[in-house]
Amino acid sequence: MPTEGAATRPDDPSLADAAASLFGAYLHVPFCRRVCPYCDFAVVAGREDQAERYVAAVTAEIERAEPFPSAPAAVFVGGGTPTRLSPVALARLLRVLERRRGLAPEVEVSLEANPEDWSPAVAASLVAGGFNRVSLGAQSFDSGVLAVLGRRHHPREAEKAVFSAHDAGFASVNVDLICGTPGESPASWRASVERALAAGIDHLSVYALTVEAGTPLSRAVAVGAPAPDPDRQAERWEEAAYLAAAAGLIRYETSNFARPGHACRYNLITWAQGEYEGFGTGAHRHRGGTRSWNVRRLDRYLEAVEAGGKVVSGAETLGPWEQEAERLVLGLRRAAGVRAGAGGGRLEQSEAGRRLSAAGVLERVGDRLRVARPLLGDEVSRAVLALEPADC
Ligand code: SF4
Image 1 (cartoon, rainbow, N blue to C red):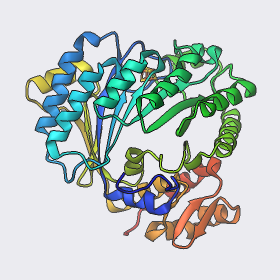
Image 2: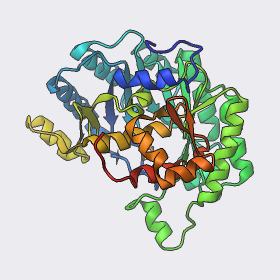
Image 3: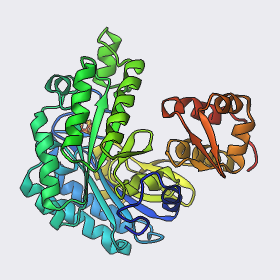
Image 4: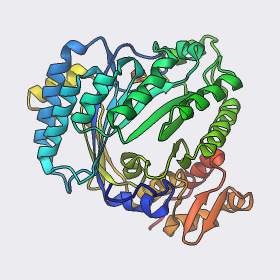
């Protein structure tokens, strides 16, 4: 990797800051076997008959894109479930991307995968095609919890996927876990985290189950189904953080833990307000100070690309203060924190900032600001967003 060695701690401030000058590329694959009840992403189920058409459309979108400012140092193929496409199709997309501006030496090439679509043969083909990092959507190692989440794989499949990813030569293996699913007990959560860590993962992402408007989960909660409890979720996060640290994984962002040398570079770029280009349904990009995003609906995306039309459905350009506030909010989620700068100084001097500093939540270390108690990070974000816009 161009910015870190195998021993670089994921929470190293220089690593966090250097990511701002790297360029990333995101490819979205919307296909899923079925739509999970809590999912709010741009996904479609049972439309794999459109896979070839979709690969052709993404290829065309990449070929028409503005030239990249530099060769991508990180590529992230997310979804949806990227492995609903064949390894050959995924490798083909990577080659098309490479033709735009090349790929940086030792580029990080990540993809998301579900255990039920994984096999040693798929893993080996992906490595041969240029992928070197995989993020496995295990979510839980408790069959009952998986059933509530609408996931059909067996916990053992997730474990085997970690082993076969390493055996195939993936340099970094992440597991995603969701905490706070109704029906999850403290013991089952602990067992899930322990089982993921015991499988030898390099990276762990812990997300709290959230009830997104418009999802089947939100409709179920509206008619009386149990909702996730934020206090229980905080306890689960603390337990995961404790177990991850004991296994040698260092927290480098509120939800993310990694061994030295295994921070996710693509995420570091987005958290540092770096630039990235996005392709596919619902994909977002950040170029020249403007954020824009593609249409989410598969049919509309395909028709627009095939007609040579625009796929961008919205855009926003942040003003100087909004950019500064975003820099603080994103930066303060990282364990490395953020250079205080003009906005950080205003935060420290605000009433909420003084209170958070006195309570040991907001901490000054040299020229950086950090959140010392990550579970209270949302309070810090609210304090940033409550600041009056100002010149900076
Ligand atoms: S597998 Fe992931 S992307 Fe697909 S529906 Fe489930 S949560 Fe959404």
